[in-house]
Length: 170
Figure (tube, rainbow, N blue to C red):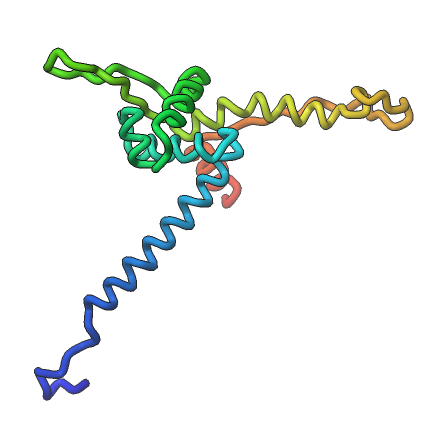
């Protein structure tokens, strides 16, 4: 391409933009799938994980809106939302309307940091069970480490982690 020829064009910027958008969409999908996989472990099922992700992206959604946004069956969504609400992993409030019609529930997912805190105790209990497996299985006294402490898990805020890293660098 030369500066002398004003009619000579750059490669079609629409093609480049389309390719960039496709790559960005693919990256987001892969990222979302990774998040869904991790949350499936935390929330027990992929269905519950997809609902959680949808509610984090679209707080104050009704069960119908969640079903539309996730592609899940409405009955499946309603059942999972009821369980998640009972477990304290989503909040539920009545949607206000001016008319005399139906006021459906709106759901929002708790923050990820709160979600982690809800499972820390469960994970800690499971780790302690494994840690003390010999006690449960009746292992011999020669094999037991009687001076061992139970497993303890602590969760730090991102600000606490940043602060600790700054102290380590000094």
